Image (cartoon, rainbow, N blue to C red; front, side):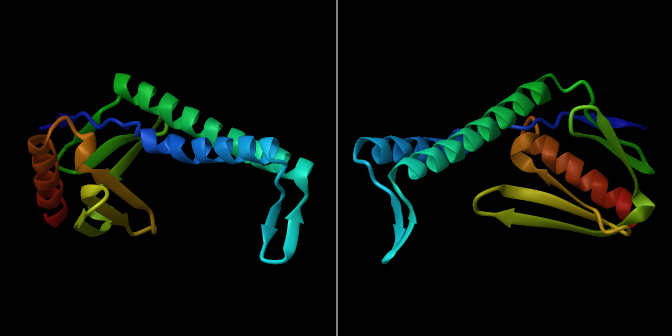
Length: 156
């Protein structure tokens, strides 16, 4: 008997914080013509500091856009997590599906992290690690059902 669960990537606005910080630093460096120093060591003079901070801001903007794009793709999620008595199949990335045999699971543990909430961590014999967070399931009940099924099938 196969069971399916929706597992969606979520976008947090906190992905934008580094980009915002570097944008502010870039503007301040341009307006006040500041360089970058560490104690008495001058690392970058005025015009170069603007360029470096601007490039860092662009990198973090691209990262935030990538996370937003992957969250949008995940919301459509054509490949949900599927559990049978012998296998666990789930999407990894946009097109790749991972299929784990429960016999290959080396370690299975649950964690309750302050920042990320409840998580189920699966380690395989070939040293791969997969992590499933409660907040990415439809609700807490679905996560609890998923966790109990994985534990039940992995222990058999």
